[in-house]
Length: 358
View 1: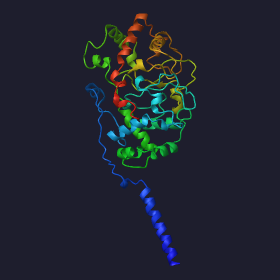
View 2: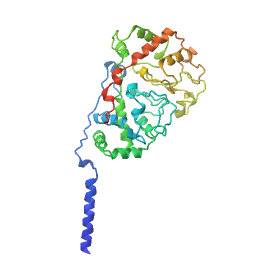
View 3: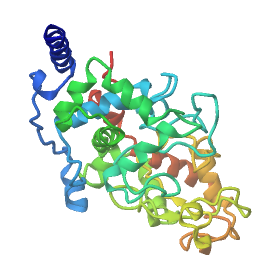
């Protein structure tokens, strides 16, 4: 009897040691959690006009966090069938926007809104066209489980990452834990997205750096329209080329999408959508929340003579001008030329923003 008990105790002890040896505890590796803080390099004029780039206290930028977020941003395993990543609908060559009118989910389903560009979002006060999320972290959480986007579950994503050969180390180095969960995934993605800053366009060189040769004569004429007759600067203002407000620019009399009115449940917000930045606007077609305008010519034509003055809750900056600003053909061409000066080629070619995955 004693021999049998000793045998059972020996087996139990062996199994216990085996389980401990196989359990990937933090002490079983030589990984180091020593996060290196990162300050995003910005032109002097950005610091002058906007101050220090805001970052949340519970998700500061670090080298390891940004590197992890970049890898996750491009990883198709976030989707249910491993075919779709964040970058599928946010392409660097299009200023992290989608050239399709509506993005396509893993099952071929289409949404009813055009994807928004990801750039300079540290200064944004709300996310999505309707402002339904307050932070980049919250925004990054939604597409994974959206039934017309990635169509996955966070339980599946977390399992895939925990069982990956490299992600446990990357998460440990970024956050000091092996407990990989959705909260850490979106924190890492948000860190990477905060580094996607764009302030090196010909417009910046001309307007903020004082290089009078940075714009063509036609673009300078377009600038005068932008800040003058066209009143573009009323909403697409300051360094960000957006005031980050929500406005109805007079697209429709009958609203098929009430925009901000849905998450706020306030009828006074019906028809209001986020004012998008015009930075890299020449790269982010199609335009408006529903991608109805295929090119800048169509956009300028709309503001010239296509505004619906009786649209519900039409913005105060638009209403006084009736159906539009009545641009001449030459003024339209000049304005479009100026809008093209917002293109930042260094942004779309920055290797630090590209796909790091093998």
